[in-house]
Each structure stands twice: as structure tokens, then as C-alpha cells.
Length: 582
Image 1 (cartoon, rainbow, N blue to C red):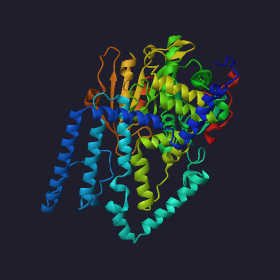
Image 2: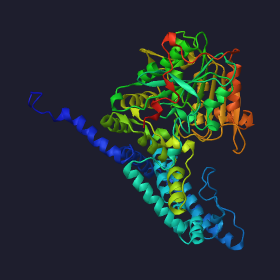
Image 3: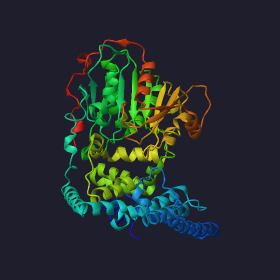
Image 4: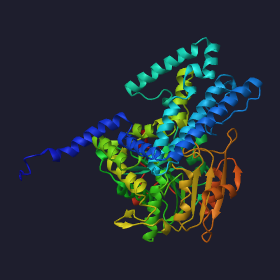
């Protein structure tokens, strides 16, 4: 044995070599770890092989499915054709009447029965870990969605009808769409149509001024639109994984403009789109130079007034950390707390949790270490996988088989305006919040001491959306067991983005449920809440406006823009510079 530590340098170089190899693999697999999928299917297959009862159950189900499909085929010949299985409510692939004609009805019914069988095969196997079961089910669903009969010309009656109707022109247009998309991706050009929704020109138009800027945020103060305003200003904290103008899209689609029009003094944070130089920014930086710096600025510009703080998605999570830290130190500058689609307990994060385990995060760290940040395209790829049926395959059918062009609106353009996440901060929040669930379990530290969400003593308005795959509403609802303050919970139709961008007005069907829990009320589980909470038609925005008004003190003259004496001057017009950085 050689005792010279310099004699064999390979072990010291190995971590760097591993990281380089992992980074290359992660770039090819959208950050998914082959080892994690392999472990999941090994776990599933091993336990399925040792479960003869489950095998018998699956064989019986396969036989029953065959008999049901045969009976369906016979009934079709007699005109008594009721489907033997219905698609899930959110599955619109087979909704067109053409799918009820022979033989396409048998094709799609067979597919749905097969889909149901595979779901049952990958779930309920004794001994399989919950995470591996979810991964196995997810992988099976991805493969099934790939081979859905709706994805192919010979088995899609809608495409066949369009082909006959146009003499094949739809296929020619589809080929042109495919060619343009391939060229766009090869040149890394923006999606066609997004140039019609530029921040400050077509979207993010609410008048205002940037009144503060540091290395991480710009703070925008919006100009008053009413003669008097509510005394307490609103500070909006958006998520750092998105650009803030989802809350200030077109004028008729802007929550910011809506609140300003209701008589509120509104501030919003605009996060910097980080680059490689920001690789060492961490969660503490985002808390102190982000949320707390914005609270300091608002308190200086509107002195002696408490703040109605509003957070969206992870912005709400970070805002809750700030609120708990402030409560611990007896900082009473907050008047209320509004959390839109914000998780505080990450024990059940929905399908996003499929991408979060130790193996996945090691893989992701390797990918981020190479660049110093996580590219927004990686995050977009993960979200696409979560809803590949609608965001990938249905879009391909629409664009390349039907030959149509996907319309670009303000929300679609915003969604394509991706942001990056700095290496250290992204790694910290995935590990501390998602993997370890430190915040909900009382281990998350601020200034070296754990914070407790139960310390928050201001009224809270929390909102979940029914079809949210990023922040599932059952997970958002867990705030009921984490806080003891007055809590108003709202559940609205829609998903993570569409459910939030939900302005009042005719033309779109929407509804919400709303109920308030008093401080001395007992716990009610989410499903019971959903069955008992009063339902209302329309947008939830007026309900929020009414709640904010109830927690305001009085109307006063609008405050000045900025406060030069305290060092907060007007730097430039909204929407500022940070939001323009791609």
C-alpha cells in the first residue's frame, strides 16, 4: 500500500468525472434518472412476481375486459351501443362524435380498457414503495399516451375526416408546421406569435414605476387609479420560477390592474432572471434580498401602515417563511397574508414529486453545476411530461395531423417566456422543502433558528385550484393543520395558471367554493370541506377583493411614488428591466 496521498489522484477527480457524465445524461433525458426508473420497475416486478393473488386479479380483469369489449361489439351490431368504459373527465381525446362510429369505438374502448388494466397492474402491489409505485404508474401512462389511437392517422377518425374533406391539405400543412418547428428549435428562435405579447408593450401595461432595485429584485409601485386608496398597501411576491407578469397580462386579464382599480396601492416584485454569475445565491438571499428587502421598501414608502402581503406559487411559500420569521421576532408589519396555489407542506406534492428523490437531485445537481443554473427549458420539459397527453401528444395531433396552428394568447406567450434558477438556491429549496419537508416539520431555519408556521397570527386567505398538478389543492389545504389563525380557504376551477388568471366577466364558465375557519374551529378534512363549502358562480377575484377590503382600515389619499428621503426614488417606468431579460 502506498501511503503517499499524491500517488493516486484518480479518487479525488472521480466526483468531477461523475458529475460531468451525469450532466451529459441529464441533458439527454430532461433530467430524469434512468436508475430511478430502473429501481422503480425492479421493485414493482419483484413484488408482483411474489404476489400470486395480485396476478390472479389481473388475469381475471384481463378476461373481464375481453368479455366486455366483445359484448360491446355485439351490441353495436344491434344498435344498442353503450360504451363499456368512459374516459376520465379530463380526457378529451375521444369526445368527438366520430369516435362512436365502428370500428373506432372498438379501438378507443380497447385502449381505455388497456389503460385501466395497466393502472391496476402498477398500483396496489403489496410491498412496493409509494414512490416507486408512482414512478411505475407514471411510466406506464407515458407509454400508453404515446401509443394512443388518437395519435395516428389510420386510427383517428377526426383526422381521417379532415383528410378526406381537404384532400390531404391538412397533412401538407402539418408537414409545414413540423418543418417550421424543427427549424425553430434548431435555431433556438422564439415561438411564432410570442412577439405580439412583449412586456411593457402588449402585456404588463399597468402604469407604475420601479422604485427599488438590488442584485436580485426590482420593486414596482403601481400608479393609483382612484381618488382615495385603502390605507394598507398590497405587496405581491410572485414565484422566482416565473416572470411576474402572469399577474399583469393584458389589461382585461390583469390581477394587478384589477386590485389597483379597486382602490389598492399595489407593489410587486420582479425577480432577476439569473445567469451563471448567480450560481451561489441561496434561499437566504432570496429571503433577505428578496422578500424582506421588498417589505422594507414598502414600509418606507408607505410608513406607519401595515402590509397586505400576497404570494403566488413558490412566492407564497417564501412569503410564509418570511411571515413566520417576522412573527418569531415580533415584527408586526404584516396586516394579512394571501397565498395563491402555494404549498407549505410538501409531503404530498402530487406528480411533481416523481422528479424529486435523492437520485434525481444528485443528477440535477450535476446538470446545474455545469452551467451554474437550471435552464427554464428543463423545468418546462418536466411540466410537459406531467401532462404529456394534452401538452405534447394532443398538440402534435392538432398541429401536425390536423394541420392547424396553435393560437398564441397572452398566457401562452408568458408560459413560453421561461426563467432560470440559480444552482445553489434551486438545490436548497428542492432538498429542504420538497425532499425533507423542513418547513412543515419545523426544521427550516432562518438566521440559524427554526421557524414555525404556527407562529403566524395574521388572517390568511389561501387559494387552491382543482386541476393543479404543480401545487395540488389537497396539498395547499394542509395549511389548515399548520396554522392557527383565521383562515379563509378558496377552491376554484382551473389549473395552476388558468385558475389564477381568472378575471370576472362573461363568456367563460368558472366557479369557486369559499369558507372561513375561525381560530377555535376543529379540523375538517379536504374532501369533507369540498362537499360542504358554499359554491359560487363566477371568478374568485371579487371574493379576494372583498376579503382584502374587510382587512383594511380606511381609505386615504394615495401615497407618493417612492420616498426620496428614505432612498427610494423612481428609477424607470414599469415593468422595469429584469422582466425583459431572456
